[in-house]
Image: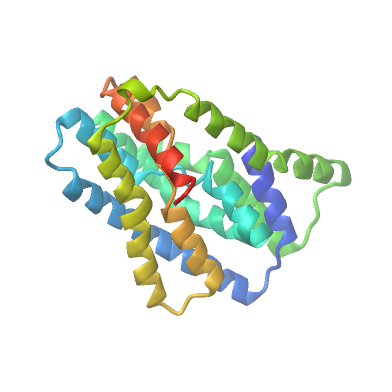
Length: 253
């Protein structure tokens, strides 16, 4: 809620506002919407035979991956400030899906007013809006604030890796193995990004947009999978296995 928004704002202030950039924003936004729709359908079809508790965890984990917390720093590390800006735009549909379809998976309901409020007041969404305004107008942040935003934003990769390390430290190998989790991980880390790659290859996209779409589609299960499973009492140990195992396997994939 602090580091990532600062990181996003800084990336936008480093960008340019020419027409080709906005075309890329629109391209990656539309592709992201398509991927989210695909993932909703994919999760329902692939895991429909699983017990109800596991089915909910698997469906949510297919809709919502860790594209923000892990994907943003990796996107920035590979593609620089441009990659971070495009990744931030890509994540807008996913954040909407997280608070609507994703939440409805566990709760069984989706309050449209609450969903709209959570989306519109999410710090990362607000950071995207502010970043676009600054980039279009060319207005700089005040000198002292600019330095603070840059310094805090630069903590993103290091802090992300620390949190991931703490998640992986919870592994208990004795009761960790689960073939359903392995199946989910293959779908999440291999099959879904492979489908995204094949489809995007047929479109007239730049290498950066293509690479980012595949990279972000290949992220592991989001940590909120286990958090929401615990909140709604839906097989949280299984959800935790999904998060840890897919995160661990995402290192090589």
